[in-house]
Image (cartoon, rainbow, N blue to C red):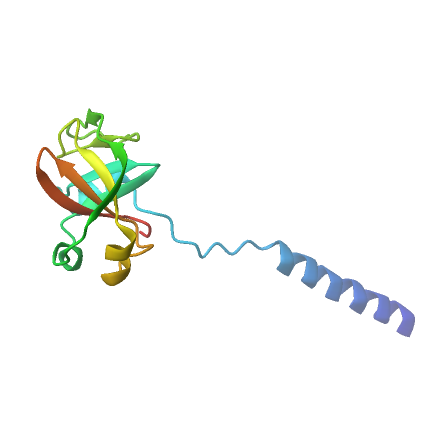
Length: 136
């Protein structure tokens, strides 16, 4: 009888371990969608580049003085109102032909924006800073 209890206890422990290991715990935060951004702020100035949504008018970034680095892209299409399926190069407020630049590395390091997904867009002479929306 003791042997049966020991085997039962062993199987019970193994079952708990297997069940505990198979439970998925997804604590990751996904980037917001275009629809979420526009719903939260209908006046949001956004574009998609390399699969990431970038947004302008971030107060602390707008206060910085950043230097343009290399050209990395261009706005190729204007989004239509209530159109939430963006593709790379699509913007809701920027003009077609606006140029996307990386921030010059020393400027980014000096302003603590290095690695923060900040880019500079030149929209026919007007420069604006955009930050990648990485978290929802």
